[in-house]
Amino acid sequence: MTKPRVALFPGSFDPFTNGHLDLARRASALFDQVVIAVAENSAKSSLFTPQERVEMIEDAIRGLKGASAIHFSGLLVDCARRIGAQAIIRGLRAVSDFEFEFQMALMNRRLEPGVEIAFLMPSQEFTYLNSTLVKEVARHGGDISGLVPALVARRLREKLRPPAAKARAARKAPGRSG
Image (tube, rainbow, N blue to C red):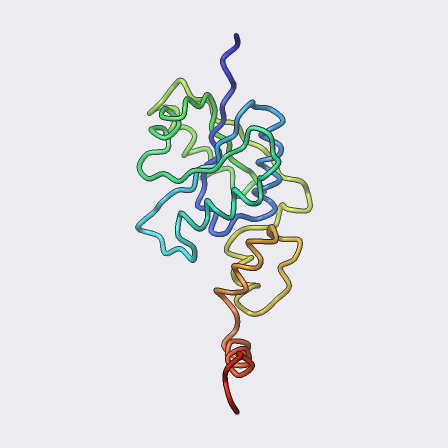
């Protein structure tokens, strides 16, 4: 029996976007298993906890054959070893992504020569999309439909509802008089 081809797709995914989902779908067409790994980075301030991000990713990838989500801390190559990954998936949206990704790929190759780095490009409709941009649009009450999976959109609206909208919702809350 052939050993399953396992790919690790790491990132902060704060939040998971439809661009990330597009890359997960592309990776799942190439690999038997795709493990989407949420990085815990204590030096970075995150909107969602690693557990919340894993939960939202699991909801988004339901039905995607061979896909799963985990969270990890520490070196990426250690996580790759733990899950038996032969490849690490990285997305490239534009040429500007390449320099950083290339440096990271070379370091990861030095740390673990047995794991390949596979660069995938998202669909053209997602090349401009990133988590920071999505959070900014959501923070200002903009329409994020089509940018993130449904559960992510709902959670973003809950966390980032503009102050005026929060005040209106509080005034309309059941049990309040006035």
